Every structure is written in structure tokens, then in C-alpha cells.
Amino acid sequence: MASDPRPWRRLYKTAAWRRLSTAQKEREPLCRLCLKRGFANDGSLTSAGAPQSNPRRRHVVADHIVPHKGDEALFYDPDNLQTLCPDDHDRNKQREEVKGFSEERGADGWPLDPRHPANR
Ligand SMILES: [Zn+2]
Image 1 (spheres, protein in one colour):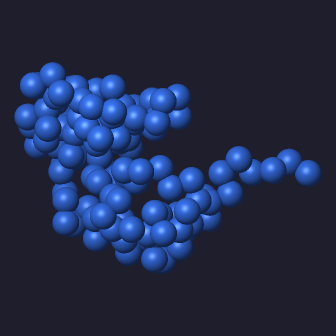
Image 2 (image 1 turned 90 degrees about the horizontal axis):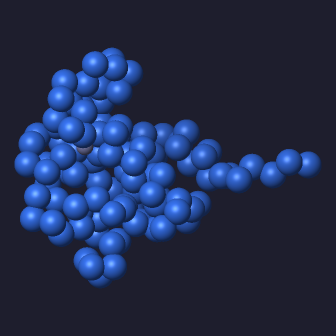
């Protein structure tokens, strides 16, 4: 029998998650990383600050700061959420899978990711 590598995907289908992610996006409607780069992105821009031309990417997502890997306490912890644009979300996820943190740096040259060793 093939095993699902991400059995926690069911968590995203729960009403509790829908409520939590909606509340997160209401509390923090702008991408946190774009804001650190110096501009406000409510999903209408790319992570480079250009107009988002893809209508399916014109939104923001509630992202888990510490990867939950199925841990329900982390998954449902509102303090473990941040709002990201789809560009930043994808980039974070890819780097995270390799290293566990993002190498992206802000205007001051300091790493943006709270999980980066420099921020621990
Ligand atoms: Zn962004």
C-alpha cells in the first residue's frame, strides 16, 4: 500500500483551520515578508513589488512559521501563523524542505526568517 507522505493534509480541510486561517488574514492582511522588504502587499503584487498578473495568485495565505509536520498543537497555534503572498509562500516552502529556514534577507542585510540561525 502506498503511504501518503503528508497525511496531515486532512487538517487543511477542517472547519477549525478555515476559521483560523481567515482570522489570521483579517488580523494581518499584508504579506509579512513583503512588508519587511518595504512595501505593502495584500496579494495584488508579486514579491518583487510588481503588479501580480496571475489572477490565481492574487491573494495571501496563512503560513505556518514553524513547520507543523502534522503536529496539531503547532498546526492550530495562532501564534505560529504569518500572512504571506503566494510567491513568498512557495519560496519559503522550497527552501524549508532543504534547510529548515529561508536565506532571504531584508534591506538591512539581516535574514528575514525567524528560524534562520542568525535570528535564534
Ligand atoms: Zn510577499
